[in-house]
Structure formats: C-alpha cells, structure tokens
Image (cartoon, rainbow, N blue to C red; front, side, top):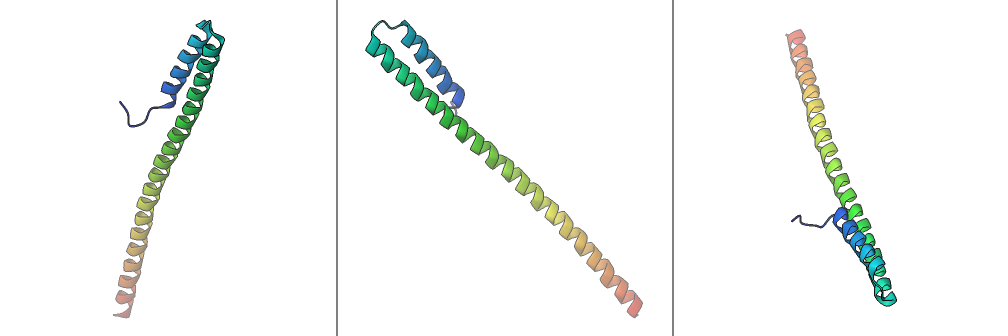
Length: 94
C-alpha cells in the first residue's frame, strides 16, 4: 500500500457510499451516508491537491538539476575560454 491514499481511492469510496445511500430506506441513514460520500469527495480533492503539489516539486527538482548541470557546462566553457585567453596572452608576451 502506498504511503498516502490517492484521490482515486477516495472517489471510489464516495461512489460506494452514494450507491449505498440510494438503497437505504431510512431517510436519516441515507442522509448520513450521503454526507459521508461528500466527505470522501473532499478527501479525494485534498489527495489530488497533494498529488499535484508532489508532481510540481518533482518537476521543479528536475528543472533545478538541469539548470545546475547547465550552469556547470557554461562555467566549464567559460574556464576553457579564460585558459585559452591566458595561454594566448602568454604566447604573445613571450
């Protein structure tokens, strides 16, 4: 089982609760079950929000890693240019 229960799980529970509410003959019990279904839907929405936030965090981490790698590439290229410039100056000075 995953660390957190996802939105699909809670939506399934909501659907089950709504189906049960439709079959209950007692009005109070049916109303209570409908309220439970509404709470399951709220839990599904919160789970979706968490899933979206996690996906955004992972995406941001991938972008940061790419930018970090790109920065190192740019810095390495700048170092190569600087070394070439310095060696060219040394060659001209001698």
